[in-house]
Length: 204
Image (cartoon, rainbow, N blue to C red; front, side, top):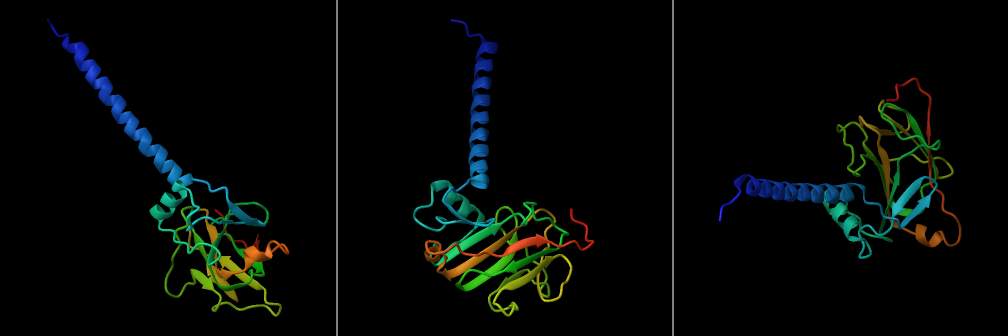
């Protein structure tokens, strides 16, 4: 019996290539799902969204894996709701270099935090003297209890949240010990709006 070495070598090489391609496709598909998995169970108020099952036993496997991969920790509702906003009130993405004004009432909560983040919800940080995050106790409220917060890469008077991103960014609003889920059944809760302020700054 005589082996046909070219044919055998071709079959081995072809099988090996299929094996490698299968592994790469598997890695790519899993990575894509972890980076782009969508949780359809969310609460939407204006353009703000909160994915309710993050941090709970009801989260699907992809959401759990994505949360673990990016280190996004949630206490789970009702202890903690994380709202995300990626567009202004005109529906345009939040861009670096632009000046935005967040105004309105924060839903009733014991504590809130507000910061900018990338698409993986990783917070943008800045120097010690630049406010990269705001919370319940370091903001100035209007007489009616509402807030006006300037979001800009340059210093602003009043409440200022520095935007240090070089790419499109999102606003992350954490509500701790909030009653927002119980109030939705009685009345529609309010969320602050975000509008772009013409300021002469270059919006990338």
